[in-house]
Image (cartoon, rainbow, N blue to C red):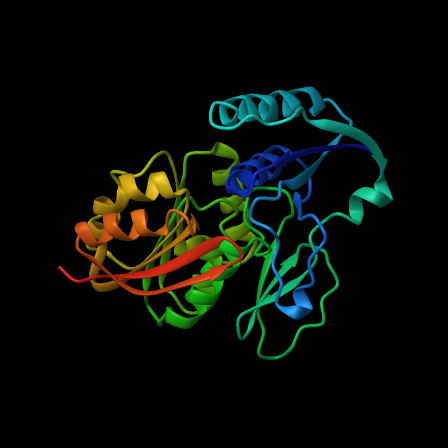
Length: 298
């Protein structure tokens, strides 16, 4: 089978929505490639001013044109905020495409994210999350998803109720349930993400413990004060807008995990949540991305 490889370069702050776009409408997991010139073994990190390459793959079949159109529409919207170059296209063969699919990844103490049908040497202590590659954003490889998973592993308690805002592939809901949560509600505005989440929670055996909602947040089926953990891996501007509503959904002394926030915006996000009645418990950073734990204190 032949595949169409598409790629585009972008400033770091637009990598997240572009990766999401490529994952929603492509096949397999999009890749994110930093420029070289730094040595991570010496503690060096990529230059935040460098542009980053995002790659995705489309099958050559009856869906190719519609997939390309959907991606083009998304990129045109992003171009309202940044001057992006044109998409580059290259035809690749089946072997080249398979080599680009995401690899199993270990996260935190015991979590492992594994693509469906992949070979994986499982340990007795592993909590394995199996995903269908390419269905929606969220495989654990991006720093924001990885940090969310690490924090979920630390804080989830048996019988917790979890709300996952912008659920994407459903990976965060699945992780919470696998770690002992009683029920998880995921919500996303993208139909592809909703379908991906339903499929993934079903494959993971958690369909009866999950509710996946289509639409925007706040939502009529999400009750204030009902959740022990709320996770929102979404853009900073959206978090700021939703801060009061997100705090209201958390039970007293519950925790909100915010992610998807560049370090340049973290102070704005923290201020919004503090004004809404939240209290920052911790903030951590990988590359330019941050994840923050916020408790409801009033």
